[in-house]
Length: 186
Image 1 (tube, rainbow, N blue to C red):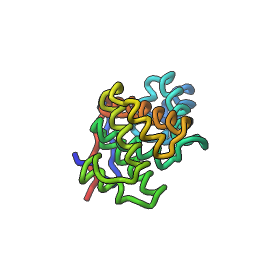
Image 2 (cartoon, one colour):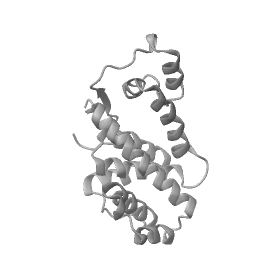
Image 3 (cartoon, rainbow, N blue to C red):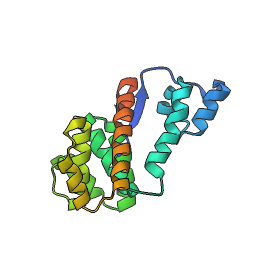
Image 4 (cartoon, one colour):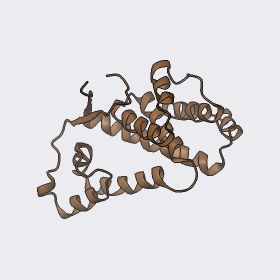
């Protein structure tokens, strides 16, 4: 399946928790989730302790009002998802990046031309670092950090970038091993 800016659905391979018969703990954990009725979160609800930690972590990393701008966090998650081959996550966060920046053409170029497509210095540094950190974590070097700093990122922004990439490495693996993307209807 190709990477796309269109909405992609996700089909779980395991039975989902039925919201009507969820335990109080499952219901509480789902209430903290961004989309309590999505098949993904209803699948994760089988492990209440994990889901109960996942959503607050996601919110802290992606929506914190400090550090790296939200659109750049979304860009990093798109890159991580592309490197990992997670079409679903890439689609969701590509659309969020496009909504925030009003620049869907940036994502379209990344999808069509690859991660090496020409970008401004700041985005180039973010894409290169996110790709290196995702592919082989030790491949993210001092040169990558120097490029990020040269492009104007401060230490808190770099830490936010690392958190977004690391969290999505985990999210991609969960999505890809618990189910599969469903192509958009065209």
